[in-house]
Every structure is written in structure tokens, then in C-alpha cells.
Length: 216
Image 1 (cartoon, rainbow, N blue to C red):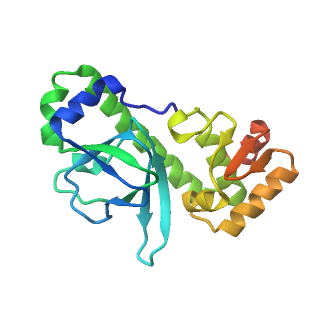
Image 2 (tube, rainbow, N blue to C red):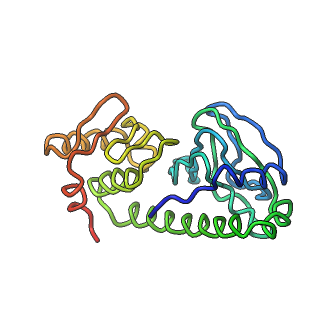
């Protein structure tokens, strides 16, 4: 699925409705369980959206980049945050409430349409994440993630069609499996000639072979 982003030309609506601020790498934007009353547009940088289990385990749901929004739970009345969000690198954000944004939605049909598309994309992504974590084995999980993340190049995430700039540890965090397992799977793929490995980099050489591993 193509990643839907808010174009720079529409940032002004969020800026007029809310306020801009910056956060450093590793800083927390909000915590799971907090009141959900604001949504966020990323003007620069990337954030990690993840779930924390009762025993402290973390499951990364997505790395979100420039031009996208997060905090959609604020669309629901009196809801709480279902995830935690941290800055991956230095980020510039615009934060506003849905009530503050309402007047501008009536001014721009394009903005309203893109917001609906973003919500639809979020539902698709979560469904795909649930399928991967529930039904796939370790080989399928890694192959699926590599293919999904590189399906559409993203300059903001430094991802090309055949290269993803993630370390083994970062892949493990995103997939919710341990780093040793990820390394074993990647080394297996490399031996098969399907990928190549570099410093914090996975280069895909045979997409068809990786795709053939995955259950339909």
C-alpha cells in the first residue's frame, strides 16, 4: 500500500490550529495510558510508535516519518493512548486538538480526504502487523518486514526499493523478536543469496525468493 502523506502545502492548517515544537532523539512524546486529546503532524524527523506489555516488553508498531500524523486516538471521545511514542531522531512536530482543526477541515476538502486516507492506512498497517506477529514464523516475519518497508522508497526514512537502513537490533525491536534470532535469519538469507548485509543496512537482492517464503 502506498504511504499517504500530508503535503507541505497543507502544513499551514495544522500550524494555524496548533503549535510547533521540537524534541531530541530519545525523548518521549506521550505515554501509553495518558489521555488522548491531541494529534501530531511530523514536519521533520521520525518517531517510533510502540506498545508496552504488562511485563515491560516492547512491540514496535511503526516508525513514522515526515508528512504523517500520529495520535489518531484523539479522534475518539475521552479515549486514552494505546501506544507510547518516542522521537527516533530530532523531530519537529505540530500539535493540535481535533476541535482546533475542525474549522480548517471545512476549508480544505483535500485535507479532509487525506486525513481519511491516513486513518485507512493506519487500519491496514495494524491488520498487517497483527497477521505478521500471530501467524508468521521467524523467517516469514523478517522477510515480510523487509519487503513491506521497501515496497515504496522513502527519502524521509532513508529507505530505497532494495535497501533498509536498520541494524539487527532495530529490526528485532520492530519485529518483537530477539536480536540473536534476527541475526540468524539474516545470515541464512545472506547464505541463500537473497540479501546482503552492511553496517546498519540490509540490501535485498532477490525479492521473489523472500516473497515465496511468506504465507498468503
